[in-house]
Picture (cartoon, rainbow, N blue to C red):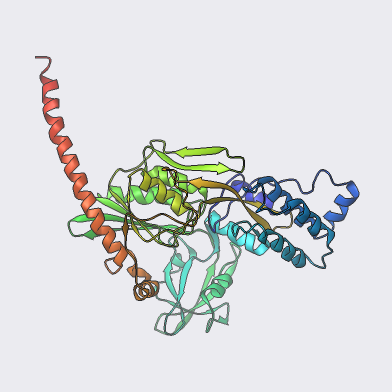
Length: 448
């Protein structure tokens, strides 16, 4: 139970996709159980099984439980003896598989902590993004995160990481290296760096770092100034980062925006709604329907920052919260969507912390786009379909600095579409100005 206070800021939130949020903790045991049975369960791996069963029983979106007798499932889970917590975990996973819902899933304490950290958008480390060189496999720095210990220490893009606390990185994966570099804030770590001038050791102190889920640039494309924004995930900090990007690019007098949601797996429901409101002044955003058929429609609230032309980039890995945002902007005519069919995830999950530090994600709602479309297993069809060849996809994966440039075929097409929208926007603005001027003169002359 010591983990629960750390999650207080996430209580009552809802999630999409791979990211996580939590709801309030529910009662541990069924009220119908006798005190002796309660005590027995508290001292056995069965406690978490019954806790998880009750959450599904109370909240799961399908009240037939995929035509499974859910009461019998409980009896089966609690009648068995388990030699370890891991054995109980496996039994719970097997029981959940009977729902035939990949999004209702159990997470052991390590998996739950990792997903919680992901959704918070904060990590504890030194602040570097790594990649393995395609030919050599050497670990190199893609970039130091701004305002991080790595940036303050002068780590540069292209630096090779030879060792982490004396442990060679030869043959090490990016994931394993990142795991070694992460650690509690305030603890020390030494990286051996190769910058082409011989290796040297660099001592760093880990710190808490807000992960940048929004990256943006001002791109000059012909005679138009384009604000390019890439959103990688809908985390707790995504809305404030998106607001900053829009406001900064607007101050730089952009003519329009490209919002890139390719590869974005989703995240917090609240973030998808808040970000929709940054772009959309009026109209519906999403309608959610729970297990009893009750619906809840979220709408824009006249808080849009800009009305400049907007083009969205999506692909088959744009899922859940990405599809909420895409559906809201597309159905309301706010943006032109370019790319390929989106993933097609129209289900909402809540995630609950369990008493031993593990967690449970449960599907609780179905959602529909403003036009009433059910995108489940179908996704959203772009207004302008542009596919990448396998060769183009592999090239961009190996040269991520070219994503969102003229070397990116989907971005290139998005610019063409956006420039046409910008021209129409300018023309409409010019016509409104011409119409307003005579009226203004007439009103000024009325007193005479």
